[in-house]
Length: 143
Image 1: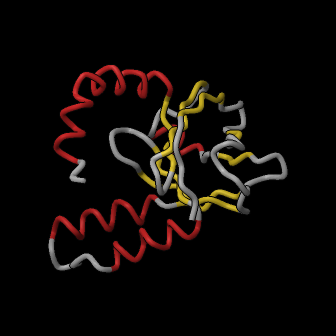
Image 2: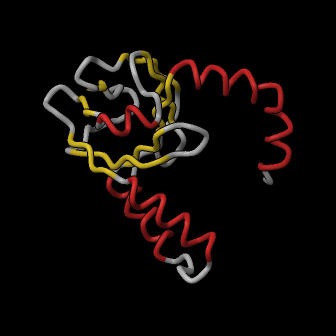
């Protein structure tokens, strides 16, 4: 299971192909799994991390409405993306359209997966959230 970190700017070509940064992935897998992310991005997982996510979804109570809604939205958006010989994946037209993934994109590592953002959307997110970084750390990190 990979550990993903860093920010990489890339360009999605006219066929919606995206070069996965070699620094992000030590050994390129045959495929990735992509699904609806949070805050307007796509979440991309290697197989082992995707299986761990599915296990978490399976443990949610389907008879609880919030869990059921999350399970449906997450699992119905999942797509397997094959990696070509050049280390590229092709983002489907539906995903590209829904998440405004065109042209310039930012790929960011998020520990157990990485995210694909429209570059301008990610820059706006960073501008909005950066001033609260220390607050987030004090509320989230309990060492």
